[in-house]
Image (cartoon, rainbow, N blue to C red; front, side):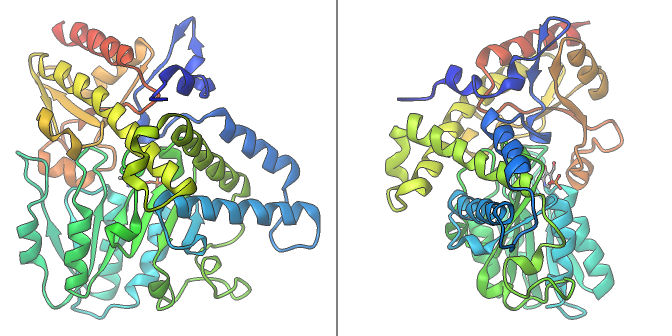
Length: 423
Ligand SMILES: Cc1ncc(COP(=O)(O)O)c(C=O)c1O
């Protein structure tokens, strides 16, 4: 069976909610998605029957142990990580990056260099700027083309020196939507003897992730961006983890992954992550038959998960195409990202735009009056907004469909936009 939007939508109770009789159109997804009912069920069930600390002799604690371990295995399958023990849970990507950057920084010496990108969300920029300040490291900046919205990787070659220790870059931009060639970037990092830290927050919801193929050292993402609860997830290469000094309290064990998990985790959140992966697994099993051959090297759940992501990517690409086409036809509108139909494989469906006469906040507010949810502003993509010259002018409007959105919703958005922007 192929993609079945009705079957997908039926699993997300939030999609049926109305306000004063008006249905909601959720296009605020890059900031956070709605969740399938299996996720809320799993979280409730965890709080009712698994509520205890880990490592005890009694039922609730054993149940909690089981669900946390199962969630690590599930995330390892989702990311094609070698082992569930390399999966670290935490509050969110930002907190985990701020925390881990301390341990990573300890590997470096004054004068060592790190490469940061102008395309990244501040969560993969400022933690490293702070480390660089504390440890007297040099920062070198990888910019992107304002015409193509992509990196020029020859520029990266020129930035890499024998002092390069770390390259930090996103899988996909939360503002332009560009999918970055992280595999090549990580290859270049490795060739230079440098580490690579990948912010997968905006790629993981749209693109199937294979950390072994990417060849990165760290990959971090947030499950609330891919239909799960508010949680952060980090994959860390085991050989590397063993070299890092974790910032932890004494009773917390020195072993991976516990050593990087500070204090008591949100077990209900972790149960929700497991249910999210199981949701993708069912999508894979029931709808992604055409994509299974792409991942025959995996087998089992790993194969179904990756096939599911391929299926969802193709569906979302259609939504992105309609959205971009419609925006380009509205006078005065500029899309801040890849628009070429033949290049839609190089972007996620997150589409930001500005208008010559109407400011982004007004557009978002007027859409909200029609119960169409989008974000305006620069979405913490501080460097990106500066490069694009929209930092001081209210940023852009960001429209982010995901696989539960319909083309009818995109049409409706465009119709309302045309009326707002014609005025
Ligand atoms: C690309 C990107 N990186 C990092 C973050 C921060 O994630 P978190 O909210 O989990 O800290 C976001 C949040 O929007 C993001 O879009």
